[in-house]
Length: 356
Image (cartoon, rainbow, N blue to C red; front, top):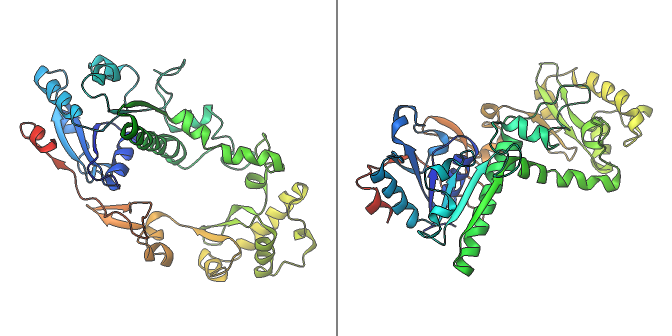
C-alpha cells in the first residue's frame, strides 16, 4: 500500500520504532539512522527493526550530518522519538529541514507532547495514561490500577496515532505539495481513545467512580479464575448473549441471576459465578462454551494463543528471526503483507546511492 514511500527513522525506543515497523509492513521503505557512537548498544535484529535498513552515523560529525540531510532530502517522511529540543540541537528540527524538503512529513513521537509544563519531563506508559484518565478504569474497584504493559499508552495512544498522522500528512502532501509536523503525544492519543467509553455516559453505562459501571463493575463483564489457576473472560452484555450464558451454566432459573443490569446485585452475582468457575479447569469451560454466542473466551499467553484453532487458522502468531511475533495487520482483500525479515545494515559510503 505504501510502495515507493521513503521514511527516515531516528533510532529510539518503543512507540517510534513500532510505528516504523508497521509502516514497513505496509510497504514503505524505512531507513533507521543509528548512533555510530553507541553501535555496541544498538538494537540488533529486534522484532521492531525487522524489514528495515539501517546506517550508523555520528550526527555531530559534519560529514555524517551532511549524509543525514541528503537522505532526508530524498524522503517522504521522518520519525523521531526524542524529547522536545533534541533534534533542534542537532540542527535537524522541522525548521532546519523545511528548505531542504518542503514536502517532508515530520513525525514527532513523545509522551507528553511538544508543548506544556511536562513536555520535557521524563515519563513512561503508566504515567501518561494515569494523568489523562485512561488508567482510571483499569482493574476492579478497590484494586490497584494496572493495565496491559505498553498497549494502551505506548502503542494505542502513541504509535498508532503517529501512523495516522503520517498517513494523513502524506495524503495532504500529494494534494498540496506541502509537508506537515505531526505532534503525536501518548498523553493526547490515549485520552482520545477514551471517547468511546465516555460516549456511554448518555446511557448511564459509565460512572466516574471505578467499579460502578457496566464494563468495569458488573458480573457480566469481567474475568474469572478456574480451578487450575487459569482464567476465562466473560462479557455477555446484551440480553440474548447473557441469557445463553446463563443457560449453558444451568443457572437461568436462579432468582439471583434474573437481573442483568441491577448494580445492587452485581457483587453477589459475581461471587456466585466465581464459585461456579472455580469448580472446573479452563479447558472444561473452553469446551463448554465452544461455538456459542455467550461471549466467553479463555485468557491465554502468546505461546498458548499460537496453538488456538482460530488464531492458528489466521496465522496471527508466527515465528520469525528466532522471535515469536504477531503477523502484520490489517489485511487487504483478505491478504496481509508478508512478514518482515531481519534488518539490513548498509555501509554509510553506499547509503546515498542505495537510498536514492
